[in-house]
Length: 378
Ligand code: P1T
Image (cartoon, rainbow, N blue to C red):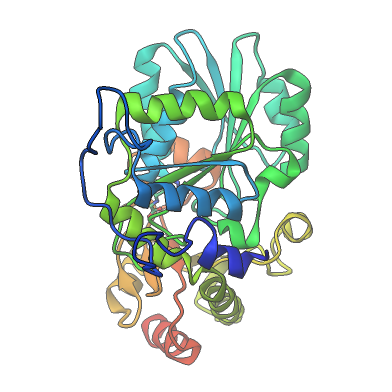
């Protein structure tokens, strides 16, 4: 089956007892056993839940993997990947990542004796140079949040395979509709399903997909042991959103390309970052590993932070808010909002300026979006 069909049907067959076409919300914490230890395969909802199972099966299929696991948030998924490691291990992480990813690595897992080196992974040679005897895992985001840096998935997968390292790609900004890292040999794909996969800004969640049985077994063990699993209703909401992922992504892409071109032609805008623009230095790499781009655009306004602040206060259709990937257009200041937990010098070193503005272009009518940006820039 193809992507659009899998999103609607994989793991979502009609329910056998009643024929319900939509996977029911199994809102139960526990399941009856006929004799101690004799059960239907379901014992306790932290361990197994049919609504969650459906989402896990669907996401695995869409990423082209064999196993999916879902979590209470994107960061709960990230934390579960870190549960693969032990004190003394070393991780190489992309320098441009979601602020909360940096924070949990730097402020939580360092305390457990795991060490991190942050590198500009656009140059895979820098990852290679950072490898130490204790290195176990490489974590990248591509396109990255918020600078939309592109990492060469084939090169990262090949390097990690040859050096025995676990490769992880946070695929949140692309969604599986536009990019499937496992196909390039990456070991684990991570998502904040809060974003494009859920798609409606009404549910927080995370996911991991892999085709490696050994990694899946340990991650599944930790999902149950630590317990940051997705609730039945949240699983159902995410599944509901997932069904329309393909058509939403097509519209996000079309709208964002028009917005990026508009911004690039505007005299008040000094720099636009969008991987599908000819001006993006990695356009060719992006187009070699992605089939399109989502609604994420970053740009700078002449006049820096103060000009950006005035602009952010004046938009009307775009909503000033953290998060991304929903049907409604959002706008934010990474330095003050989503990436404030990264120290200013670390942000500056990766190229994240205080005046940077990030857009999550939604699926409204594109003319309304362009008019809104034009009046706010004016
Ligand atoms: O918010 P949560 O569902 O826990 O997901 C964390 C996360 C992980 N990875 C990426 C690439 C992300 O962008 C996020 C969350 N990001 C935002 C809330 C944001 O506005 O950038």
